[in-house]
Image: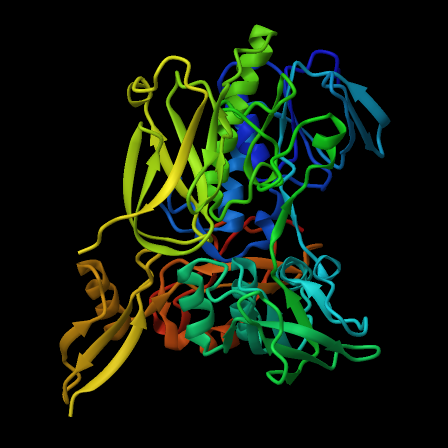
Length: 419
Length: 122
């Protein structure tokens, strides 16, 4: 294959990369390649055998493999060129890509534009510094998911799960159905980290004990995990003396957050947002390096795949436009800033001239609020939670309210006078 | 004596704790705790007919892939989930299979089939 004349190169063929590549083709890019280090397209969707995918995008309740299947077929139908078992190891500020595979060795080329779609990875025990021994049986929830759903091994019989993220709760249900005993789900915050439907359908349905405001303070066992100590935490999230209890278990699953995988972005000198861990982008999803776009979990961690697909389509479409024009469009320069009880907003800058959807998360759960986007628009919400991403649409005509020379827009989550 | 049952509504991020009051005959006589009508609908459904889509895996025979992801093509009563897993433990998926192919027809007489969630090749 000739790599000299690639229009758009997409890095990563999970849900984000597939959507970006398809859209880039549909938007007129001639040669689109989809680079993936694994041996097949689809990313982690293969191991997410549970349902709940596509409720928004397809208006259907699909399993992960089913959702992936639809995009894989479309990748083929639209004439995207997949480049499998190929790992991108270098990315330059000039869009030079360096990659390795076992067929061609080290390859380099310079596409006209790039979409970053590398997704995210899980925080591990090392990121938490849990004291104790280092036995077998401590693994991330995603690793356990791969063992159970793809490899065919149940990692243990008595399980404790630290963190109440969606993957953790989904694994609590899955392991229970496979005959394991889930002794506890332990969450340091006063509320669950995942979606409410998962708390009800994964924990309550199976009477799995949930310990809020608790954490694991020690890991016990020599060869194999034998028990964990958990303790209640105070308002500063420090363990409270005298509240410890020991839970016998042979496996500890960690579901304690996801980190966008941005090593390549940093190599290319792309500026990252310290809160999201992803690139700073404008509404076209262009990063601070011209011609390099980003979408999906590499940009900010989403809770629904549907939004990953939509956002990455936007990145793919922008990348196709950049490849055709060969020069950058004026970058959006109006800063969108997180105000009261808003943790972050993506995109971080907008031009103020195009229809734009703002994706955001709140810092703390709150009821009866209104999301206020500068003087442009407000949206009332009955309840907001950090685990549920919010979307606010700004149409071009609403954006006309912006005064000439506006440099920043502040997004606030305000209390409403409730009844 | 009226009985009470509580549920958490999953309709929105609010997650209202809704209490259902049930009379001697099992009839619903009241709701409390829900902040909208949707909550009543959800809780009534959970009380009378709580259903879930079952997703799982079955062992394969004659494929390089050890497992095949499967799902029920309709939601089934949640009280039948454990029994259904026992049925799936005995089932085997033999390639070639296409997504949507039936692996276990009419699971436990629920009217739902267990179908392949992806293709399976040898």
